[in-house]
Amino acid sequence: MLAAGACLLGAAAAHGGSTDSAIRNGGTFRISFPAGGPALDFVDPALSYTFPGWALLDAACARLMRYPDKPPPEGFRLVPDVAAAYPRVSSDGKTYTFTLRGGFRFSNGAPVRASAFARAINRTLAPAIKDKSPGSQYTLDVVGADAVQGGTRPAAAGIVARGNSLVIRLKRPVPDFPARTTMPFFCAVPPNLPADPEGVTAFPGAGPYYVAEYVRGRRVLLKRNRYYGGTRPRHVDQFVADLQANALEEVLDRIERGAADWGLVPAPIYFQAGRAQKFRRKYGINRSRFFVKPGLAIRLLVLNTSRPLFGNNARLRRAVNFAVDRPALVKAAGGRLAGTLTDQYLPPSMPGFRDAHIYPVARPNVQRARALARWHTRSKRAVLYTFDVPDPGPTVAAQIVRNNLAKIGLQVEIKKLPPEAYFNRVTAPNEPFDIALYDWGADYVDPFSYLNLLLDGRFIGGVNWSRFNSAKYNRLMRRAARLKGLARYRRYGSLDVQLARGAAPMVAVFAFNEPTLVSKRVDRRCIVLRPTLDLTAVCLKR
Image 1: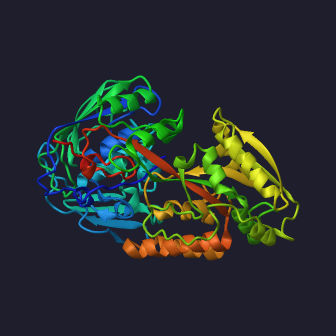
Image 2: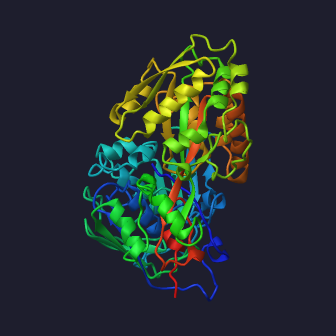
Protein backbone atom coordinates (compact mmCIF):
# COMPACT_ATOMS: atom_id res chain seq x y z
CA MET A 1 0.00 0.00 0.00
CA LEU A 2 0.80 3.51 -0.85
CA ALA A 3 2.34 5.46 2.39
CA ALA A 4 2.49 9.36 1.73
CA GLY A 5 3.40 12.87 2.84
CA ALA A 6 3.72 16.37 1.44
CA CYS A 7 6.05 19.35 1.33
CA LEU A 8 6.08 22.54 -0.69
CA LEU A 9 8.89 25.05 -0.65
CA GLY A 10 8.40 28.22 -2.66
CA ALA A 11 5.51 29.65 -4.63
CA ALA A 12 6.78 28.10 -7.85
CA ALA A 13 5.61 24.63 -6.85
CA ALA A 14 2.45 25.80 -5.15
CA HIS A 15 0.56 26.19 -8.39
CA GLY A 16 2.06 23.33 -10.41
CA GLY A 17 3.91 25.10 -13.24
CA SER A 18 5.54 28.47 -12.72
CA THR A 19 6.21 31.46 -14.95
CA ASP A 20 9.05 32.52 -12.66
CA SER A 21 12.02 33.10 -14.99
CA ALA A 22 14.34 31.82 -12.27
CA ILE A 23 12.86 28.32 -12.57
CA ARG A 24 14.83 26.24 -15.03
CA ASN A 25 13.00 24.23 -17.67
CA GLY A 26 14.89 21.37 -19.24
CA GLY A 27 17.49 18.83 -18.26
CA THR A 28 17.45 15.14 -17.35
CA PHE A 29 16.23 14.04 -13.93
CA ARG A 30 18.06 10.88 -12.81
CA ILE A 31 16.29 8.25 -10.71
CA SER A 32 17.72 5.20 -8.98
CA PHE A 33 15.65 2.13 -8.10
CA PRO A 34 16.92 -1.12 -6.54
CA ALA A 35 17.17 -4.36 -8.49
CA GLY A 36 15.48 -6.22 -5.62
CA GLY A 37 13.16 -5.39 -2.73
CA PRO A 38 10.49 -2.85 -3.72
CA ALA A 39 11.73 -2.94 -7.32
CA LEU A 40 9.93 -1.74 -10.42
CA ASP A 41 7.59 -4.46 -11.65
CA PHE A 42 5.92 -3.05 -14.78
CA VAL A 43 5.38 0.25 -16.56
CA ASP A 44 2.13 -1.16 -17.98
CA PRO A 45 -0.75 0.64 -16.19
CA ALA A 46 -2.85 -2.53 -16.04
CA LEU A 47 -0.12 -4.51 -14.27
CA SER A 48 2.02 -2.13 -12.22
CA TYR A 49 1.47 -2.38 -8.47
CA THR A 50 4.66 -1.17 -6.81
CA PHE A 51 5.65 2.25 -5.51
CA PRO A 52 8.35 2.76 -8.20
CA GLY A 53 5.92 1.85 -10.97
CA TRP A 54 3.20 4.17 -9.70
CA ALA A 55 5.69 7.02 -9.19
CA LEU A 56 6.69 6.86 -12.85
CA LEU A 57 3.19 6.29 -14.19
CA ASP A 58 1.88 9.28 -12.29
CA ALA A 59 3.92 11.44 -14.69
CA ALA A 60 2.79 9.51 -17.76
CA CYS A 61 -0.92 9.21 -16.98
CA ALA A 62 -3.93 11.24 -17.94
CA ARG A 63 -6.88 10.26 -15.75
CA LEU A 64 -10.55 10.98 -15.52
CA MET A 65 -9.96 12.45 -12.05
CA ARG A 66 -6.70 13.35 -10.32
CA TYR A 67 -5.13 15.08 -7.34
CA PRO A 68 -3.47 18.49 -7.89
CA ASP A 69 0.30 18.86 -7.96
CA LYS A 70 0.18 20.77 -4.68
CA PRO A 71 0.85 20.02 -1.02
CA PRO A 72 -1.88 18.53 1.16
CA PRO A 73 -4.58 19.08 1.98
CA GLU A 74 -5.18 20.74 -1.41
CA GLY A 75 -2.99 18.16 -3.11
CA PHE A 76 -5.34 15.39 -1.94
CA ARG A 77 -8.62 17.02 -3.03
CA LEU A 78 -10.12 15.16 -5.94
CA VAL A 79 -10.46 17.29 -9.10
CA PRO A 80 -11.34 16.54 -12.74
CA ASP A 81 -8.47 15.85 -15.12
CA VAL A 82 -9.55 14.67 -18.57
CA ALA A 83 -13.13 14.69 -17.28
CA ALA A 84 -14.72 18.11 -17.71
CA ALA A 85 -16.35 17.89 -14.27
CA TYR A 86 -17.36 15.43 -11.59
CA PRO A 87 -19.34 12.57 -13.15
CA ARG A 88 -23.11 12.53 -13.19
CA VAL A 89 -24.36 9.77 -10.90
CA SER A 90 -27.65 7.92 -11.25
CA SER A 91 -30.15 7.94 -8.39
CA ASP A 92 -29.29 4.32 -7.50
CA GLY A 93 -25.56 5.13 -7.38
CA LYS A 94 -24.69 2.49 -9.99
CA THR A 95 -24.14 4.52 -13.16
CA TYR A 96 -21.44 7.15 -13.67
CA THR A 97 -21.43 9.38 -16.74
CA PHE A 98 -18.22 11.24 -17.52
CA THR A 99 -17.97 13.96 -20.14
CA LEU A 100 -14.41 14.46 -21.38
CA ARG A 101 -12.86 17.80 -22.19
CA GLY A 102 -11.13 18.35 -25.51
CA GLY A 103 -7.46 19.11 -26.09
CA PHE A 104 -5.88 15.99 -24.58
CA ARG A 105 -3.64 14.06 -26.96
CA PHE A 106 -1.38 11.05 -26.73
CA SER A 107 2.33 11.49 -27.32
CA ASN A 108 1.82 10.30 -30.91
CA GLY A 109 -0.66 13.11 -31.55
CA ALA A 110 -3.82 10.98 -31.42
CA PRO A 111 -6.76 12.56 -29.54
CA VAL A 112 -7.89 11.11 -26.23
CA ARG A 113 -11.47 9.89 -26.49
CA ALA A 114 -13.69 7.97 -24.09
CA SER A 115 -12.55 4.77 -25.80
CA ALA A 116 -9.10 5.29 -24.22
CA PHE A 117 -10.57 4.87 -20.73
CA ALA A 118 -12.87 2.05 -21.79
CA ARG A 119 -9.82 0.19 -23.06
CA ALA A 120 -7.92 0.84 -19.82
CA ILE A 121 -10.66 -0.83 -17.77
CA ASN A 122 -11.14 -3.73 -20.18
CA ARG A 123 -7.38 -4.42 -20.23
CA THR A 124 -7.44 -5.14 -16.47
CA LEU A 125 -10.11 -7.78 -17.17
CA ALA A 126 -8.69 -9.29 -20.36
CA PRO A 127 -8.18 -13.09 -20.16
CA ALA A 128 -4.49 -12.73 -21.01
CA ILE A 129 -3.73 -10.74 -17.86
CA LYS A 130 -6.79 -11.12 -15.62
CA ASP A 131 -4.85 -13.15 -13.06
CA LYS A 132 -1.91 -10.73 -13.11
CA SER A 133 -3.68 -7.38 -13.00
CA PRO A 134 -4.19 -6.02 -9.47
CA GLY A 135 -6.51 -3.49 -11.08
CA SER A 136 -9.21 -6.11 -11.55
CA GLN A 137 -10.08 -5.87 -7.86
CA TYR A 138 -11.38 -2.37 -8.65
CA THR A 139 -12.94 -3.06 -12.06
CA LEU A 140 -14.81 -6.31 -11.31
CA ASP A 141 -17.73 -4.15 -10.11
CA VAL A 142 -18.38 -3.12 -13.73
CA VAL A 143 -21.39 -4.81 -15.33
CA GLY A 144 -20.11 -7.48 -17.72
CA ALA A 145 -16.64 -7.74 -16.17
CA ASP A 146 -17.07 -11.50 -15.67
CA ALA A 147 -17.81 -12.01 -19.36
CA VAL A 148 -14.57 -10.25 -20.34
CA GLN A 149 -12.55 -12.31 -17.89
CA GLY A 150 -14.22 -15.46 -19.15
CA GLY A 151 -13.30 -14.62 -22.73
CA THR A 152 -16.89 -14.53 -24.03
CA ARG A 153 -16.85 -10.78 -24.69
CA PRO A 154 -14.00 -8.43 -25.66
CA ALA A 155 -15.44 -5.53 -23.66
CA ALA A 156 -17.66 -5.12 -20.61
CA ALA A 157 -21.30 -4.42 -21.42
CA GLY A 158 -21.36 -1.85 -18.63
CA ILE A 159 -18.91 0.45 -20.42
CA VAL A 160 -20.26 2.61 -23.23
CA ALA A 161 -17.80 4.99 -24.92
CA ARG A 162 -19.05 7.39 -27.57
CA GLY A 163 -16.80 10.26 -28.56
CA ASN A 164 -16.22 12.29 -25.39
CA SER A 165 -18.92 10.52 -23.38
CA LEU A 166 -18.08 7.60 -21.10
CA VAL A 167 -20.84 5.73 -19.25
CA ILE A 168 -19.88 3.13 -16.65
CA ARG A 169 -22.56 0.91 -15.10
CA LEU A 170 -21.70 -0.94 -11.90
CA LYS A 171 -23.22 -4.01 -10.27
CA ARG A 172 -23.60 -2.22 -6.97
CA PRO A 173 -23.19 1.33 -5.66
CA VAL A 174 -19.51 2.24 -5.37
CA PRO A 175 -19.52 5.73 -3.83
CA ASP A 176 -15.76 6.12 -4.01
CA PHE A 177 -15.59 5.22 -7.71
CA PRO A 178 -14.40 8.70 -8.84
CA ALA A 179 -11.45 8.44 -6.41
CA ARG A 180 -10.64 4.97 -7.75
CA THR A 181 -10.10 6.45 -11.22
CA THR A 182 -6.99 8.26 -9.93
CA MET A 183 -5.09 4.95 -9.84
CA PRO A 184 -2.85 4.03 -12.81
CA PHE A 185 -5.19 1.14 -13.70
CA PHE A 186 -7.56 3.78 -15.11
CA CYS A 187 -4.96 5.75 -17.11
CA ALA A 188 -5.95 6.61 -20.67
CA VAL A 189 -4.32 4.15 -23.10
CA PRO A 190 -4.55 3.87 -26.89
CA PRO A 191 -7.78 2.01 -27.77
CA ASN A 192 -5.77 -0.67 -29.61
CA LEU A 193 -3.17 -1.27 -26.89
CA PRO A 194 -2.81 -5.06 -26.51
CA ALA A 195 -3.16 -6.94 -23.23
CA ASP A 196 0.25 -8.57 -22.86
CA PRO A 197 0.83 -10.77 -19.77
CA GLU A 198 4.46 -9.58 -19.78
CA GLY A 199 3.32 -5.96 -19.92
CA VAL A 200 3.88 -3.41 -22.67
CA THR A 201 7.27 -1.74 -22.37
CA ALA A 202 6.72 1.44 -24.37
CA PHE A 203 3.47 3.08 -25.39
CA PRO A 204 1.97 6.48 -26.19
CA GLY A 205 0.97 8.33 -23.03
CA ALA A 206 -1.53 11.15 -22.60
CA GLY A 207 0.00 12.67 -19.46
CA PRO A 208 2.79 15.25 -19.22
CA TYR A 209 5.31 12.51 -20.10
CA TYR A 210 5.22 9.09 -21.76
CA VAL A 211 7.16 5.83 -21.43
CA ALA A 212 9.58 5.93 -24.36
CA GLU A 213 11.64 2.89 -23.34
CA TYR A 214 11.73 0.15 -20.73
CA VAL A 215 14.62 -2.31 -20.69
CA ARG A 216 13.56 -4.74 -18.00
CA GLY A 217 15.95 -4.81 -15.07
CA ARG A 218 18.07 -2.00 -16.50
CA ARG A 219 16.41 1.33 -17.25
CA VAL A 220 13.25 3.30 -17.97
CA LEU A 221 13.10 6.44 -20.08
CA LEU A 222 10.22 8.93 -19.77
CA LYS A 223 10.10 11.78 -22.29
CA ARG A 224 8.05 14.95 -22.41
CA ASN A 225 4.72 14.63 -24.25
CA ARG A 226 4.80 17.56 -26.66
CA TYR A 227 1.07 17.16 -27.34
CA TYR A 228 0.01 17.28 -23.69
CA GLY A 229 -3.17 19.34 -23.32
CA GLY A 230 -3.57 19.51 -19.54
CA THR A 231 -2.41 21.89 -16.84
CA ARG A 232 0.06 19.78 -14.89
CA PRO A 233 3.65 21.08 -14.71
CA ARG A 234 6.48 19.54 -16.72
CA HIS A 235 9.77 21.29 -16.16
CA VAL A 236 12.40 18.68 -17.05
CA ASP A 237 12.86 17.22 -20.53
CA GLN A 238 13.07 13.60 -19.46
CA PHE A 239 13.45 11.12 -16.63
CA VAL A 240 16.00 8.31 -16.73
CA ALA A 241 15.47 5.61 -14.11
CA ASP A 242 18.35 3.23 -13.46
CA LEU A 243 17.06 -0.10 -12.11
CA GLN A 244 20.35 -1.70 -11.15
CA ALA A 245 21.16 -0.51 -7.63
CA ASN A 246 22.26 -3.49 -5.57
CA ALA A 247 20.44 -2.39 -2.42
CA LEU A 248 18.23 0.34 -1.04
CA GLU A 249 21.19 1.66 0.91
CA GLU A 250 23.03 2.08 -2.40
CA VAL A 251 20.14 4.19 -3.72
CA LEU A 252 20.61 6.64 -0.84
CA ASP A 253 24.37 6.64 -1.38
CA ARG A 254 23.90 7.50 -5.07
CA ILE A 255 21.66 10.43 -4.19
CA GLU A 256 24.08 11.74 -1.57
CA ARG A 257 27.05 11.75 -3.93
CA GLY A 258 25.06 13.14 -6.87
CA ALA A 259 24.95 10.05 -9.08
CA ALA A 260 21.13 10.16 -8.88
CA ASP A 261 18.68 12.94 -8.11
CA TRP A 262 16.11 10.82 -6.30
CA GLY A 263 15.12 7.24 -5.57
CA LEU A 264 12.13 5.71 -3.86
CA VAL A 265 13.36 4.19 -0.57
CA PRO A 266 10.95 2.78 2.07
CA ALA A 267 10.80 4.74 5.31
CA PRO A 268 12.25 1.94 7.53
CA ILE A 269 15.54 2.09 5.62
CA TYR A 270 15.90 5.75 6.58
CA PHE A 271 15.34 4.93 10.24
CA GLN A 272 17.83 2.07 10.38
CA ALA A 273 21.45 2.55 11.46
CA GLY A 274 20.85 6.20 12.33
CA ARG A 275 20.54 7.32 8.69
CA ALA A 276 17.69 9.77 9.31
CA GLN A 277 19.58 11.35 12.18
CA LYS A 278 22.67 11.66 9.99
CA PHE A 279 20.68 13.36 7.20
CA ARG A 280 19.03 15.61 9.77
CA ARG A 281 22.38 16.78 11.12
CA LYS A 282 23.81 17.24 7.64
CA TYR A 283 20.91 18.86 5.78
CA GLY A 284 18.32 19.83 8.40
CA ILE A 285 14.69 18.83 7.89
CA ASN A 286 12.37 20.23 5.23
CA ARG A 287 14.95 22.75 4.05
CA SER A 288 16.65 21.72 0.84
CA ARG A 289 17.54 18.04 0.54
CA PHE A 290 16.05 15.97 3.37
CA PHE A 291 12.31 16.04 4.03
CA VAL A 292 10.15 14.30 6.60
CA LYS A 293 6.38 14.73 6.41
CA PRO A 294 3.31 12.83 7.68
CA GLY A 295 2.20 10.12 5.30
CA LEU A 296 -1.12 8.44 4.62
CA ALA A 297 -0.44 5.11 6.32
CA ILE A 298 -1.63 4.91 9.92
CA ARG A 299 -0.76 2.58 12.79
CA LEU A 300 -3.85 1.51 14.68
CA LEU A 301 -4.82 -0.81 17.49
CA VAL A 302 -8.16 -2.35 16.56
CA LEU A 303 -10.50 -3.29 19.40
CA ASN A 304 -12.62 -6.33 18.58
CA THR A 305 -16.19 -5.21 19.30
CA SER A 306 -17.60 -8.67 18.56
CA ARG A 307 -15.96 -10.11 21.69
CA PRO A 308 -17.31 -9.78 25.25
CA LEU A 309 -14.54 -7.46 26.47
CA PHE A 310 -15.11 -4.54 24.07
CA GLY A 311 -18.57 -5.33 22.69
CA ASN A 312 -21.13 -2.69 23.77
CA ASN A 313 -18.40 -1.25 25.98
CA ALA A 314 -17.49 2.18 24.59
CA ARG A 315 -16.29 3.35 28.00
CA LEU A 316 -13.55 0.73 28.09
CA ARG A 317 -12.62 1.45 24.47
CA ARG A 318 -12.23 5.12 25.34
CA ALA A 319 -10.25 4.15 28.44
CA VAL A 320 -7.76 2.27 26.26
CA ASN A 321 -7.39 5.38 24.08
CA PHE A 322 -6.50 7.41 27.16
CA ALA A 323 -4.13 4.76 28.54
CA VAL A 324 -1.96 4.06 25.49
CA ASP A 325 1.49 5.65 25.43
CA ARG A 326 1.70 6.91 21.85
CA PRO A 327 5.20 8.46 22.09
CA ALA A 328 6.60 5.13 23.31
CA LEU A 329 4.89 3.32 20.43
CA VAL A 330 6.31 5.61 17.77
CA LYS A 331 9.75 5.27 19.35
CA ALA A 332 9.42 1.48 19.03
CA ALA A 333 8.66 1.94 15.33
CA GLY A 334 11.91 3.75 14.64
CA GLY A 335 12.14 6.88 16.74
CA ARG A 336 10.52 10.29 16.83
CA LEU A 337 11.03 10.90 13.13
CA ALA A 338 9.21 7.67 12.22
CA GLY A 339 5.69 8.97 12.79
CA THR A 340 3.41 11.90 13.57
CA LEU A 341 1.29 11.23 16.64
CA THR A 342 -2.47 11.26 16.18
CA ASP A 343 -5.62 10.17 17.99
CA GLN A 344 -7.97 10.17 14.98
CA TYR A 345 -8.64 7.82 12.10
CA LEU A 346 -8.21 10.14 9.12
CA PRO A 347 -4.56 10.93 8.34
CA PRO A 348 -3.61 14.49 9.35
CA SER A 349 -2.92 15.37 5.69
CA MET A 350 -6.37 14.26 4.53
CA PRO A 351 -8.69 17.05 3.34
CA GLY A 352 -11.34 17.70 5.99
CA PHE A 353 -9.17 16.53 8.88
CA ARG A 354 -9.44 18.74 11.95
CA ASP A 355 -7.38 18.07 15.04
CA ALA A 356 -9.93 17.77 17.85
CA HIS A 357 -7.42 16.81 20.59
CA ILE A 358 -9.69 14.00 21.81
CA TYR A 359 -7.08 11.91 23.60
CA PRO A 360 -3.64 12.81 24.97
CA VAL A 361 -0.92 12.20 22.39
CA ALA A 362 2.03 13.64 24.31
CA ARG A 363 1.57 11.25 27.25
CA PRO A 364 -1.12 8.87 28.57
CA ASN A 365 -3.77 10.11 30.97
CA VAL A 366 -3.89 7.11 33.30
CA GLN A 367 -6.15 8.82 35.81
CA ARG A 368 -8.82 9.50 33.20
CA ALA A 369 -8.37 5.99 31.77
CA ARG A 370 -8.90 4.37 35.17
CA ALA A 371 -12.02 6.41 35.80
CA LEU A 372 -13.55 5.28 32.50
CA ALA A 373 -12.49 1.66 32.96
CA ARG A 374 -13.85 1.32 36.50
CA TRP A 375 -16.63 -1.33 36.58
CA HIS A 376 -16.20 -1.94 32.84
CA THR A 377 -13.17 -4.26 32.61
CA ARG A 378 -15.39 -7.39 32.67
CA SER A 379 -13.12 -10.45 32.43
CA LYS A 380 -10.06 -8.24 32.98
CA ARG A 381 -8.25 -10.25 30.32
CA ALA A 382 -7.37 -9.37 26.72
CA VAL A 383 -5.59 -11.19 23.89
CA LEU A 384 -3.39 -9.00 21.68
CA TYR A 385 -2.20 -10.09 18.23
CA THR A 386 1.00 -8.68 16.77
CA PHE A 387 3.37 -9.52 13.90
CA ASP A 388 6.03 -12.18 14.31
CA VAL A 389 8.84 -10.67 12.22
CA PRO A 390 12.62 -10.22 12.62
CA ASP A 391 12.10 -6.52 13.31
CA PRO A 392 11.57 -6.27 17.09
CA GLY A 393 9.31 -3.22 16.69
CA PRO A 394 5.90 -4.98 16.63
CA THR A 395 6.83 -7.12 19.65
CA VAL A 396 8.04 -4.10 21.60
CA ALA A 397 4.84 -2.26 20.67
CA ALA A 398 2.74 -5.14 22.04
CA GLN A 399 4.72 -5.13 25.26
CA ILE A 400 4.18 -1.37 25.65
CA VAL A 401 0.43 -1.81 25.22
CA ARG A 402 0.43 -4.68 27.72
CA ASN A 403 2.17 -2.50 30.31
CA ASN A 404 -0.14 0.46 29.59
CA LEU A 405 -3.33 -1.56 30.02
CA ALA A 406 -2.13 -3.25 33.20
CA LYS A 407 -2.49 0.18 34.80
CA ILE A 408 -6.25 0.14 34.17
CA GLY A 409 -6.79 -3.42 35.33
CA LEU A 410 -6.44 -5.41 32.11
CA GLN A 411 -4.13 -8.41 31.87
CA VAL A 412 -2.94 -8.68 28.26
CA GLU A 413 -1.72 -11.91 26.66
CA ILE A 414 0.46 -11.35 23.57
CA LYS A 415 0.27 -13.71 20.60
CA LYS A 416 2.65 -13.29 17.66
CA LEU A 417 1.55 -14.39 14.19
CA PRO A 418 3.62 -14.59 10.98
CA PRO A 419 2.64 -11.92 8.43
CA GLU A 420 1.46 -14.48 5.88
CA ALA A 421 -1.14 -15.79 8.36
CA TYR A 422 -2.03 -12.53 10.05
CA PHE A 423 -4.76 -11.27 7.69
CA ASN A 424 -6.57 -14.60 7.46
CA ARG A 425 -6.56 -15.01 11.21
CA VAL A 426 -7.81 -11.56 12.19
CA THR A 427 -10.59 -11.64 9.57
CA ALA A 428 -11.77 -15.17 10.40
CA PRO A 429 -15.16 -15.45 12.15
CA ASN A 430 -14.96 -15.89 15.92
CA GLU A 431 -11.19 -15.38 15.99
CA PRO A 432 -10.32 -15.09 19.73
CA PHE A 433 -8.45 -11.79 19.85
CA ASP A 434 -9.41 -8.55 21.56
CA ILE A 435 -6.72 -6.18 20.27
CA ALA A 436 -4.66 -6.35 17.07
CA LEU A 437 -1.86 -4.23 15.67
CA TYR A 438 -3.00 -2.82 12.32
CA ASP A 439 -1.03 -0.76 9.79
CA TRP A 440 -3.41 0.68 7.21
CA GLY A 441 -2.85 2.65 4.04
CA ALA A 442 -5.19 2.84 1.05
CA ASP A 443 -4.42 2.59 -2.67
CA TYR A 444 -6.11 5.93 -3.32
CA VAL A 445 -6.72 9.05 -1.26
CA ASP A 446 -10.30 9.32 -0.09
CA PRO A 447 -11.84 9.41 3.42
CA PHE A 448 -14.12 6.52 2.39
CA SER A 449 -11.07 4.25 2.36
CA TYR A 450 -10.32 5.08 6.00
CA LEU A 451 -13.67 5.44 7.73
CA ASN A 452 -16.11 3.36 5.66
CA LEU A 453 -13.76 0.53 4.79
CA LEU A 454 -12.46 0.18 8.33
CA LEU A 455 -15.68 0.77 10.27
CA ASP A 456 -18.78 0.13 8.15
CA GLY A 457 -20.45 -3.16 9.12
CA ARG A 458 -20.66 -4.31 5.50
CA PHE A 459 -16.87 -4.73 5.45
CA ILE A 460 -16.70 -7.15 8.38
CA GLY A 461 -14.76 -10.15 7.14
CA GLY A 462 -12.62 -7.81 5.08
CA VAL A 463 -10.66 -4.84 6.37
CA ASN A 464 -13.09 -3.98 9.21
CA TRP A 465 -11.00 -5.85 11.77
CA SER A 466 -12.76 -4.32 14.76
CA ARG A 467 -16.06 -5.88 13.61
CA PHE A 468 -17.65 -2.50 14.37
CA ASN A 469 -21.25 -2.51 13.18
CA SER A 470 -23.34 0.43 14.38
CA ALA A 471 -26.63 1.22 12.63
CA LYS A 472 -26.15 4.88 13.52
CA TYR A 473 -22.61 5.19 12.19
CA ASN A 474 -23.26 2.97 9.17
CA ARG A 475 -25.97 5.41 8.16
CA LEU A 476 -23.77 8.46 8.74
CA MET A 477 -20.81 7.00 6.81
CA ARG A 478 -22.98 5.98 3.87
CA ARG A 479 -24.53 9.43 3.70
CA ALA A 480 -21.09 11.03 3.71
CA ALA A 481 -19.99 8.72 0.90
CA ARG A 482 -22.70 10.12 -1.41
CA LEU A 483 -21.33 13.67 -1.14
CA LYS A 484 -18.64 15.19 -3.34
CA GLY A 485 -16.19 18.05 -3.26
CA LEU A 486 -15.69 20.19 -0.17
CA ALA A 487 -18.99 19.03 1.34
CA ARG A 488 -17.67 15.46 1.32
CA TYR A 489 -14.46 16.39 3.10
CA ARG A 490 -16.21 18.54 5.71
CA ARG A 491 -18.72 15.81 6.53
CA TYR A 492 -16.02 13.16 6.84
CA GLY A 493 -13.90 15.48 9.01
CA SER A 494 -16.77 15.81 11.49
CA LEU A 495 -17.56 12.10 11.33
CA ASP A 496 -13.94 11.23 12.09
CA VAL A 497 -14.17 13.20 15.33
CA GLN A 498 -17.53 11.64 16.24
CA LEU A 499 -16.26 8.11 15.74
CA ALA A 500 -13.01 8.59 17.65
CA ARG A 501 -14.63 10.44 20.54
CA GLY A 502 -17.90 8.56 20.90
CA ALA A 503 -17.52 5.01 19.59
CA ALA A 504 -13.73 4.58 19.82
CA PRO A 505 -13.57 1.18 18.05
CA MET A 506 -9.86 1.69 17.35
CA VAL A 507 -6.87 3.44 18.86
CA ALA A 508 -5.12 5.71 16.34
CA VAL A 509 -1.44 5.86 17.31
CA PHE A 510 0.51 7.69 14.61
CA ALA A 511 0.70 8.42 10.90
CA PHE A 512 3.87 6.95 9.42
CA ASN A 513 6.22 9.69 8.27
CA GLU A 514 7.64 9.63 4.75
CA PRO A 515 11.29 10.69 4.41
CA THR A 516 12.69 11.88 1.08
CA LEU A 517 16.26 12.67 0.05
CA VAL A 518 17.14 14.53 -3.16
CA SER A 519 20.43 15.52 -4.76
CA LYS A 520 21.89 19.00 -4.62
CA ARG A 521 20.88 19.47 -8.29
CA VAL A 522 17.16 19.54 -7.39
CA ASP A 523 15.65 23.00 -6.98
CA ARG A 524 13.84 23.09 -3.64
CA ARG A 525 11.19 25.47 -5.01
CA CYS A 526 9.80 22.68 -7.17
CA ILE A 527 9.63 19.96 -4.53
CA VAL A 528 6.14 18.59 -3.90
CA LEU A 529 5.75 15.37 -1.92
CA ARG A 530 2.33 13.93 -2.62
CA PRO A 531 2.90 11.29 -1.13
CA THR A 532 6.16 10.43 -2.91
CA LEU A 533 8.06 13.03 -4.90
CA ASP A 534 5.79 14.52 -7.55
CA LEU A 535 7.94 14.01 -10.63
CA THR A 536 6.00 16.34 -12.89
CA ALA A 537 6.66 19.25 -10.51
CA VAL A 538 10.43 18.81 -10.14
CA CYS A 539 12.97 21.14 -11.70
CA LEU A 540 16.75 21.33 -11.68
CA LYS A 541 19.04 24.16 -10.68
CA ARG A 542 20.79 26.14 -13.35
